[in-house]
Image 1 (cartoon, helix red, strand yellow):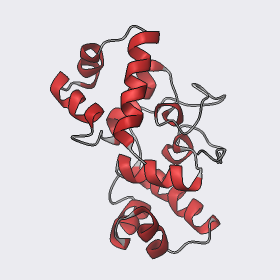
Image 2 (cartoon, one colour):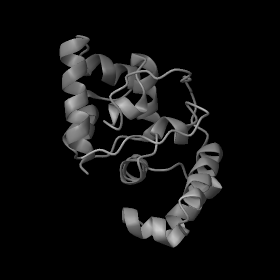
Image 3 (cartoon, helix red, strand yellow):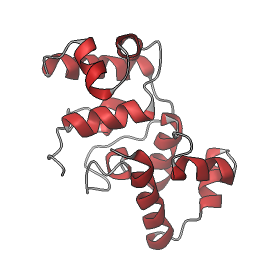
Image 4 (cartoon, one colour):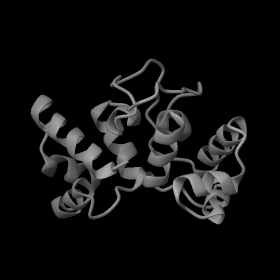
Length: 160
């Protein structure tokens, strides 16, 4: 599961299809082109807030950006300006319990420690993009649902 390859494909697509430049995206995010390049090349992980902003600006789902779905804009998706760590944590906890996983099991599966899962679920920390991506990819869960961009839990089709 390589997030940087996913982002590279996405940015190439929007550059070709929508004629949007890296400079214009960097300006919209209030970051340098070099910082955006670091995200795309895997030298740094893109913060979830920036991923959400890109989704809002381009009117494209986070699931589509992360190659979790081939649907660019599902029905009833919301634009969220400020991600809510508590709401995201509540949704994550609900999904974890539905999957009958302990915090420790989920943490081990995605390669982080149990305290990180606990902090995500309690809303003390906003989930990291790489953790969100790994959970969604592993369990076929919609990132848009976990982020609160849609209210209905969406389980995505299994990907190869």
